[in-house]
Image (cartoon, rainbow, N blue to C red; front, side):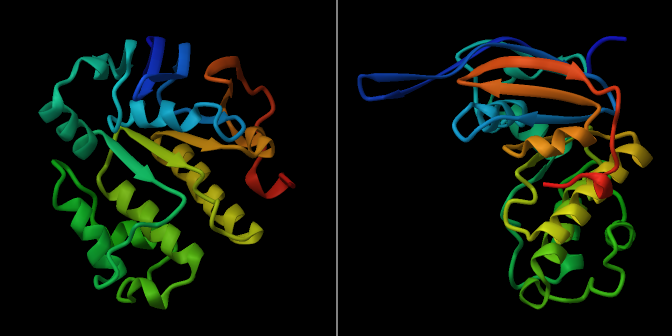
Length: 234
């Protein structure tokens, strides 16, 4: 079966005046459709650069990137906007909710820009917020706000869900609950989920583990002993 996500010999160089910084060097990997993939590495290793290129928020210097057989790295600016809008859902460390909109309105806002969105209220129910959908972000806990952010991403009905340190602003217990939601979403919907993290412990919950070090892929392996989030300690 062909890879759903594929990086081929990707290089990314940032230029600051006369200085060139190589953020990624000859990065190649694959992710299968419906997999829960964890990309792990220390701060500055290059994992967020990988996510930004895969999400169409940054361009590469050389190489190629594919999603579902389509070459993302060959898209022009207008095509990249459509790609971000329709094909990719994003969950970040900070929730980026619109403060003067309710939870439901935040999710509906994302659904309005999509071709085939899911129902906002039903998506909020699925993430455990049936009784909080008329609350504003300031009336929600950090974990609840992150669930709204996940619901907003899921309501787009994307091909790919990209999560950049999604538990970074949450306490341990709440972070576990959010990770369980992401793992369950992958299992139940068949959505491909990629989580970026510096926390090695989270690799135990992944189907595929990609380790990044100094802008290179140090290792890529399939996990033969996948753990439920509840059984992982860190």
